Image 1 (tube, rainbow, N blue to C red):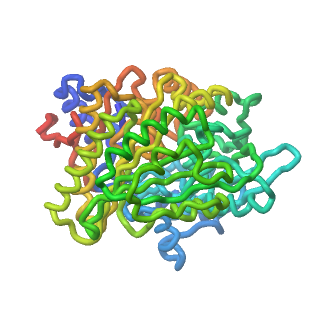
Image 2 (cartoon, helix red, strand yellow; image 1 turned 60 degrees about the vertical axis):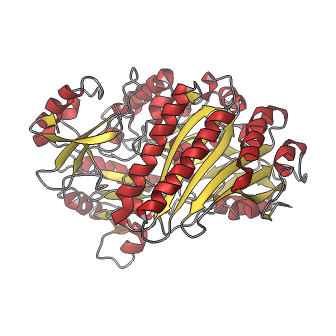
Image 3 (cartoon, helix red, strand yellow; image 1 turned 135 degrees about the horizontal axis):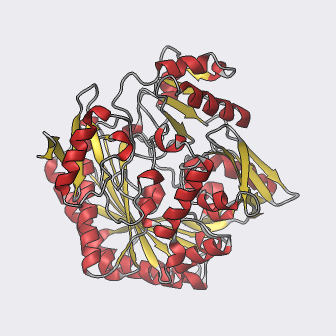
Length: 567
């Protein structure tokens, strides 16, 4: 079972239970799941109860950190509430609390749990707010715990680590560390926040040489649901240490990342644009590159196929990065031999300069979806064909305003999993695979909330078609990169049963009352994962009030529950 956010709705629980019985096992949800807890849905609400929040905010206002509270009557509230990168992810919390220290995070969490004894107090936690889907790091009617003021970066030369707080942005991190001659493995977009990126694994230019960003953490400082502040590392709370490397926000709030540093060097890289007529050569070059990363792991490449309403065509954009100051390394030879490029920004520069070029534009409604495949020319060719078909379909629909669809490919060599295992293990599960893989991301951007259904449904259909094609030609892989996952997807299940069991065990041990499973509904919840099932299923309540419309997702589409049965 897979559900993105939940709220108690016992009055409709019996309808859900009855309808589940009609799915004939397609949606293996227990009929007594938390007395009928359901997900709120396509209206992107994180709760169907509009009464959530007032007492919680009042309780926080009277607490010792009440001066950190913002409500809609405050002049700066609107700007703070709108700090989600994607317009589609912006919701309206009843109040926002901005702790300025680790101890204040503990006080906030303790106060919310106490207030919940009087009134349901759901909350969201936001670091950078770059996740596209609403409710992941945002909430309607509840409390927003905003970590944006916890944003410092401190280098410790005595032990070779940097202490980085979750509200920092990667551009700020690099600007702080570079003058001191060091760097850490981190994000490729300067505006992405540290917190969510790290907990989802964290891909980077350095991944082939050093593993995911989470594999470079020496210590996590964590606030647990009971307010206690603990460390998790290879020697202390080592089970939690492993689970926090990819396990998302299921166990606590990470308030500090102590990350191993390395000597800073300039990189060679940049963006090279090509016409779509080179697509076949690009795919062949990328597959060859992925298979040869083991021979030169200082390398990174991302291939985009991008189409917009303005250009009326598809272009190919390659992002090359080499983590040494060596121009045009041999591993990029097949790419660089492709003739007819339209632009080329490759140069030798520092990391801050490189990531500045990759900042993603805001001001759009966005969705990410992702899958993983064998490193295979045929499936990549099929994906590009699906991209072109999707582009044609959207052009025919004539969406209002500007819009873009991007198909991105990033190699996942077997090295990634090996580095994770050598660093003490994570829960991402790539160490299960000995073959080289390819990560695929579908990224759509558009304008206007009235067009959400169009772009979301077409994107999900494209993903479904591609998944079916990969199964048919035996190139499919279960891994779902959490940081690119849509709310309709199941990244935790994709980690494998062993990892699911570890996350469940850590949740039970460190959060025995399930605070991060029920009071914090956003994100991917381990309590809603059936470790013996590969199915993806969601229950949602559309609309607010006492009589929301109940829907169940079966085989990729939502069906309305009418009279206890699926319509």
